[in-house]
Image (cartoon, rainbow, N blue to C red; front, side, top):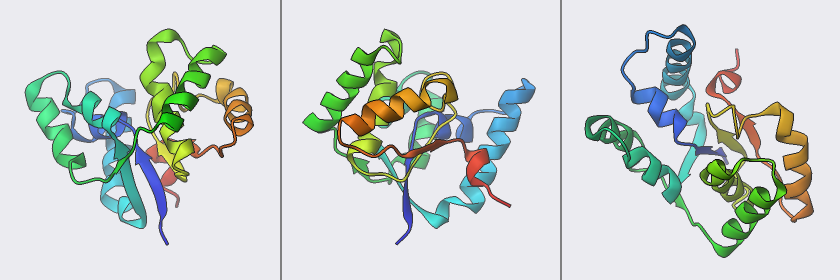
Length: 157
């Protein structure tokens, strides 16, 4: 059975964005396209309503491109358990108040036992400085923590 990957909103954003002139952004766009084209078929992809909401926001043309790549992906339910774990994450102080949606991304993957959370959000999600505390918090709530990583980390050889 293929492993499940939760596709956080930065993935369709980098995948469908116009080429960036910023070298770091351009590299992330290229790595995302390479992972999407070569590796995504090895996994069962999923998203949540939060991803749909975020992807649909902003410039209408860009939103349409983002939605086109994720609109067929299965949705994970935003349950009371997800809400509760997201609230626990926010109350811990590990994430700033402005990152409540990021807490939901993390919580939905833990509650639904997703193997990987794929993201380019290295400020609040794929952040090594908070990972141990986040891991302890989620495990103390009775859930396993998914592997939180970027497309680059899942490209392999």
